[in-house]
Image 1 (cartoon, rainbow, N blue to C red):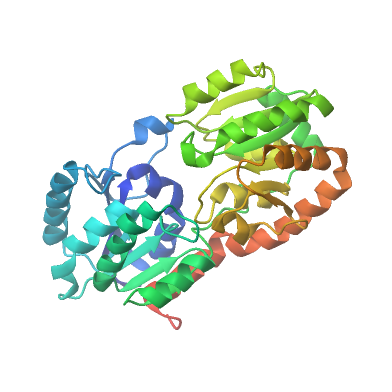
Image 2: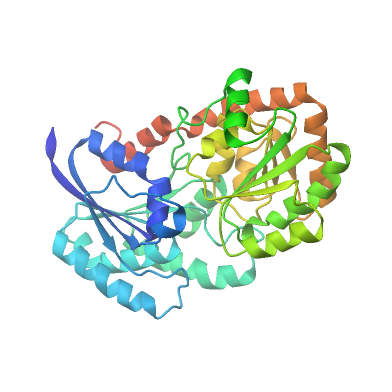
Amino acid sequence: MSFLKKILITATVQSHICQFHKPLVEMLREQGEVEIHVAARNNLEEKNGLKLDFADRVFDVPFQRSPFSAKNLKAYRKLKKIIDENHYDYIHSNTPVGGMLTRIAARKCRSQGTRVLYTAHGFHFYKGAPRKNWIIYYPIERFAARWTDALITINAEDYALAREKFNCPVFGIHGVGVSAERYCPVTPEQQGLLREKLGFSPGERLILCVGELLPNKNQQMAVSAMEQVIQQFPNARLLLAGNGPQKETLEALVRSRGLEKHVVFLGYCTNLEEYQQIAEIALSCSRREGLPLNIIEAMLSRNPVVATHNRGHDELVRDGETGYLLQADDVDAMAQRLCALFAQPDLADQMGRQGLALAMCYTVPVVQEELRKIYFGADR
């Protein structure tokens, strides 16, 4: 057993750490005695009971998503005090604002032996991104790279860009790790019981779309596609899992299209694996993704995927093999692909099986081993 190590994990909001970093913490605890601290804004009340129960100490730091918010000055001062007082061995930062402020605050402690890591969960600047993203976020990341001992990327495009443009060690890993025990295929009998439990009949054709209700997630495209889908499959239902500021807008769109019986708002789900296991198709309409967990979860549940082109979807979905890729806002193509999968269950099953095999590269044990090597070296 190694001596006690003290580790700080930061992000803009605590839900980010809850959702994405438990595998990291488990890996760290396996290496020896560690004390895990978390610093992020407490937003857990918005997340339907999500709990940050794997940390030894949690600091509520009022980070704001906008890099221009004056409240981030207060957040920086509080974080700097936390870092200066606790003498961490490792500081692992995440998200653009949380990551930038953490690396600035940790400059002094790096000279005293603290190792500072940053995981980019999808740069806001990417091929085809709005010009303002490059103007705002690219200089931030390039500036903060000088205080980064390990920059960790989760998709090939970000890895290549970081290796070329940033002056720090860059690593690529397979996401944050998804549980193949939680997200897994079930038998038809188990699926029938789950449908009954969740209030769906055996004859309903279920499409699951997971994500915060935000403009980037583009769920209005899914709602619009349902108008065409129900013409061929009147028993089709779209399940929207997630909450967010676009909820009222989407609800109004559903009402205006007369789709109240065909679109279900699930809210934030803590039992998302059950909805993945009763769905026939996973759907994502996002304009931007780093490496989306919902797609990996769907593939592990043996669901074919219909998704829009972006770097995260393109990395995971093999068009025509594990699902279909199409252009954002091409509602007609989306509806056609959804109907094709409903009409050809053998094809859907084949795509689901191929997706399951591919998704095993993104599971918890694989990612934990990649992180272990970054933290402690290949021979530890």
